[in-house]
Length: 164
Image (cartoon, rainbow, N blue to C red; front, side):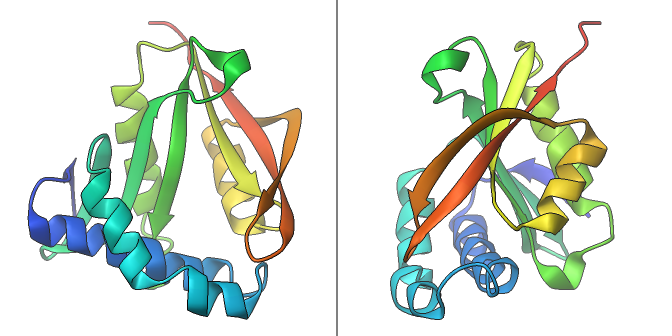
């Protein structure tokens, strides 16, 4: 397994597939099926992948993209001097192999100039919440409503990086 910056067209297409597939897998019980099937399409994920290829690390297994992480400066007004994990996804077939952890560590290394890293997690996404808590993220009390076929809640988590 290799973690590397996303560079080739094949990797961009692979990242798009992982993005789409993980939403179908991880959010099947959390979001409306109509939204997942008709709105959150593979074509939409491909469009995003080609339009926004920066700050993405992919996990490759036998040259197949099986996971990715997207990171950068915080988009939150109250966290201007912070980093953010925008997305971290691993295909269900590759769960429990440490891939998510390796992706997270690689992204945190890229974000090491920040003292605080934040991310948002969908209410009810117990697997992701448990993972983020194991890494050291904690809920900071902020929440927002997002429209994903219907209104859902997302909660912000933060991690304070120890300065070396």
